[in-house]
Image (tube, rainbow, N blue to C red; front, side, top):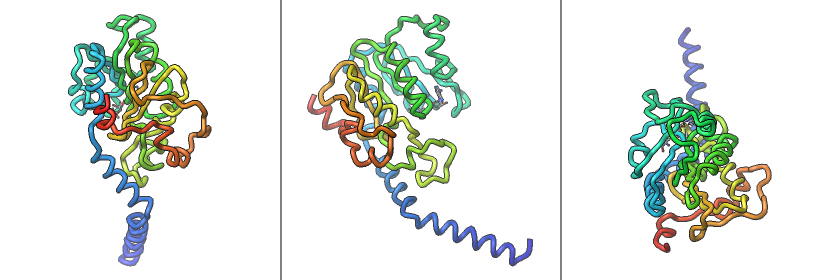
Amino acid sequence: MGFLDNYRKYKKFFREGKRIVNDPFFTQAQIATRKELKKEPSRTEIINFFIKTLSGTKYLEIGVRNPDHNFNKIACENKYSVDPGLEFKENPATFKMTSDVFFGKLRSETLTIPSNIQFDVIFIDGLHTADQVEKDLQNSLQYLSKDGVIILHDCNPPTEFHQRECFNFKNSPAKHNWNGTTWKAYYKFRHEPSLYSACFDTDWGVAVLSRKQFPAFNALEKIENRYFGYDILQNNRTRHLNLLDFNVWKNKL
Ligand SMILES: C[S@@+](CC[C@H](N)C(=O)[O-])C[C@H]1O[C@@H](n2cnc3c(N)ncnc32)[C@H](O)[C@@H]1O
């Protein structure tokens, strides 16, 4: 390749790069990411809070990746985890399989744990697509103790780019940060009259659903976002997600 060809090629890269660096969608998404990463407490603290409050003895985590980031920090007598090992080669999960296979085996009594097990806290953080999260929620409800809670990660995407469907698209303004479409399944289940829920505004949105009504937990009556549009979420975020500050909520208990 001659000098002129190289010059044209690098000039094109420079123009493209400049366009991206100065694009307000990119700068705003990066500001939103930095803001989210500063929020406290972490999902781990919230999970441990509920285990302690409920005097829970059985914890299940769906989607573990590196257990040092959350699972190993959970204080509970009996802990179980499910992960097919897509993102962390070592995959030390208790059950090395997808959540669908896990619940199928649990139902058909082919696991080492009893098929009538009742978990006190189930943390759903596996495949972040609305369809899969809906299945994980439905299955988890069958194995949840009477006063137990289901905790869902990534329910409060700060921009539409964080809630993109495609995990592998890293050239997005949100870069590699990905909440997926989990919030859509959470929003849908907020209309289930037998469940109460809230989403703590920290760590990308830590939502909690339960049959028991904790203070300030509620349900939605009317579906106002039929097509799960991001703009509608953005304009009604606090009410549609029941977004709460965890520390304020905890201090009122
Ligand atoms: C976001 S990471 C989990 C992070 C972890 N819970 C934490 O708090 O640090 C998502 C994990 O879900 C796993 N995963 C992907 N598809 C899954 C499925 N169908 N069932 C269960 N886990 C799945 C991936 O292998 C990955 O390890």
